[in-house]
Length: 337
Image 1 (cartoon, rainbow, N blue to C red):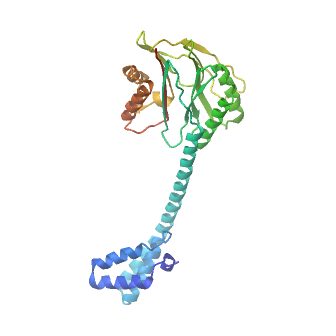
Image 2 (image 1 turned 30 degrees about the vertical axis):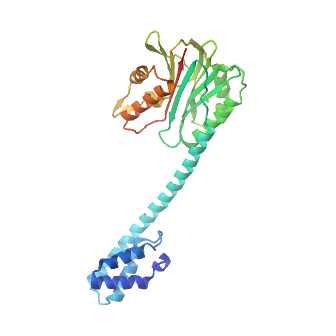
Image 3 (image 1 turned 180 degrees about the vertical axis):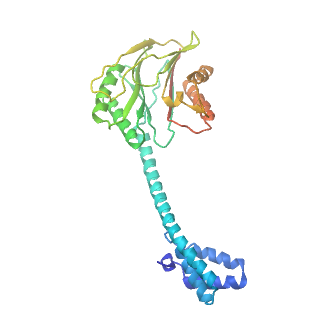
């Protein structure tokens, strides 16, 4: 295959080469540059060199034998390079195609897993969920029962990527299929565990914390399936207490019973729910202690819940040089008067 397949006029190329050898005119170089733009991307470097060599022989048939031999050497060398060059561009094309598909999947994920943050009197809610890469392995969801109580789920898939993302959408629609009357956390997790166990791929598990906030009694019911423990900030004491709850990951066993706990939430108390991307951040070689995260929350506790969440994210983002190493999800519920 020669330059004829590259949609370039070999006679024009030869004429330009001859002009340049005679005049060394930069304008001729510019014309050659414009001519090169007509070369197809699938033409390999050795083909171009070969055609240049032939054009040069037509201009100077008595070319020095050493120069001829050097061109043969260069053509053979570039033949091997051309194979690697083609493999690189084929791989690059496949990577771009895959990236485009992942971007489509990420957009679908955002659509499928979208949830509205409820607005209720007496409870301020702030949330942010930022993926480390295109696909988010974290998940959060809010539901509101027919009495106005708020259900909140926060989860993390062990096993990332597109399968994990679409698996989360299955969990979301399973949750939305549950009755709208009051559903306590232990019941939600037991129902979801059956869904996950039946449909999950081998080696993929889900951690989840599910809670129900009773807006009438300000009681906070919760249960966990192996998820990162959250915290409650007690305004009257000025201290955080860890949400002490344990439970098996979703999908490990067919029949699992989950324990349920309840705490009373007082005025100006904060409930902090998160994934391990918050508590396992790193500043260089140093793991950021969870107490440091809680201190940032405490420092901004008088702000609206969304601003508290935003301050924590910006603080940890700066410490990590604006490069998240894991998906980051943080939810703050703040009881107002």
